[in-house]
Image (cartoon, rainbow, N blue to C red; front, side):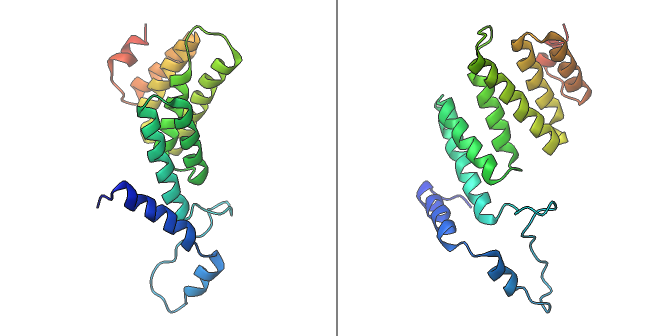
Length: 178
């Protein structure tokens, strides 16, 4: 079901005021319950993204998309970074973050801040590859363009070849071959 922005904001606010300690939640799970238990920590033992954090992350993603569409890339980046911090596995937040960094990069301008945007875009695209190998074709294509704009032609060609190998068949992947 879709909710209006005000209803969404109420859900996010309610989430922050109703958060319960993990111990209280665990106490409610009894051995007689036949329902599956929800993992409260991730496999590495660190706290997992709670339902509230996932809701907050989605809210930050939505706010970031609004800023991105308005071409307010720096504000969008802040929202996307918040979303990734709240839910590191939120793939769309990482994709938008990488794309926003790439959007901030100006080809041919050799400055530390400008080059940092390209490096951060590459870093986030590589994180997406780790989280979702299914996205390999399009992510390799985006990496190819980023490397091309950086003047790293061998890396661009390599990523274009990987994009095609992953089944990403677009005109840009073919153009990057030459």
